[in-house]
Image 1: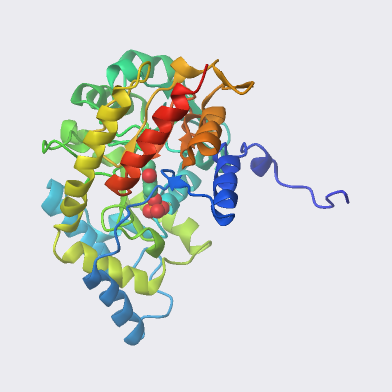
Image 2: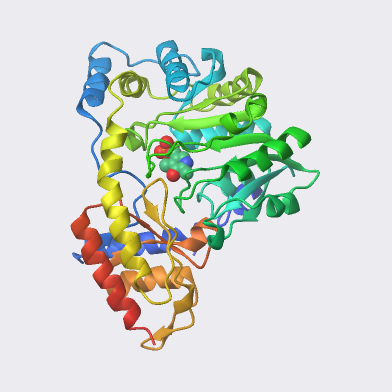
Length: 402
Ligand SMILES: *Cc1c(COP(=O)(O)O)cnc(C)c1O
């Protein structure tokens, strides 16, 4: 094999390869070869984008909205984002405090490019969304994991948080409801974050992408409501990917202090220029039209969640926190680690997910991808039939381990 001639950047080399890649590739290959794979690995709603939103996207193309737009997004959309924040939460933002970007993920990327210097630390409650640590690393920062305890329903413990803060801490991620756990941070936890952030001038990055997909009816605590004083040092990140089943349209948005949004606009202007023009008009229709779509999805998800959690918890040795939002279950299979099948020992979540794929024809995501090796993530953004069949297969596979 020829040697690679070009030296790659250190920042790329320090990002570890994704633990999900191998399992994903194998699931795809098996499926392509005709295997009957039940897929629980997908991180998007199994609903189509609402028709009126698709129509708005098509109309935008027909009307010639096919050129560059303003860097932070079209003014109408930024205005609509401000109105949503006001109506849904009572938060006041001016359009200059909004950046529309190419999906929520891109918004987070812009934030860290705008605020981090080499060696700056960012607190990442773990289990975390896969992309958080690499985003920090690619901006020259150091992700610092703050472990969350399954026994506490993955709430953030103020003492643990304090134990991981240092003089180099610059920011903290909040993701409530969380991907992968579905857990929600308590008011007590958020108050502790707010107090520490105020004292040490941390930026709070609140990833609210699942805020409309919650169960139980209660309004979730939000750090901006728990302690409004942190608004000057908080970026709220949201988007239409999950709430309106628009993952492929690539529209997300951030709201925060104008000077930080301006810095993020500088990054965006020199990288993507602006988010996709027709997609912005589709997102405008989503945010200004009827708001019942997320509730309709939630009503479909709740039955699946209830079944999934109950069935998982009925398996000996398996525990599963009941998700209060999002569309994932995150059961703990560590009681099965160390057991074997046909001479093959299950050492951790990657081996477990691989075993589920081989023996149960079930695709899942190993917890190692989220910094939590005791767990495996299953998405319930799929039909009840698939969930029922998948659970039968999982139970059989677990029973076959010795
Ligand atoms: C899906 C997701 C996002 C945003 O995804 P985009 O498709 O980039 O809009 C952000 N945070 C979490 C935790 C997610 O699961």
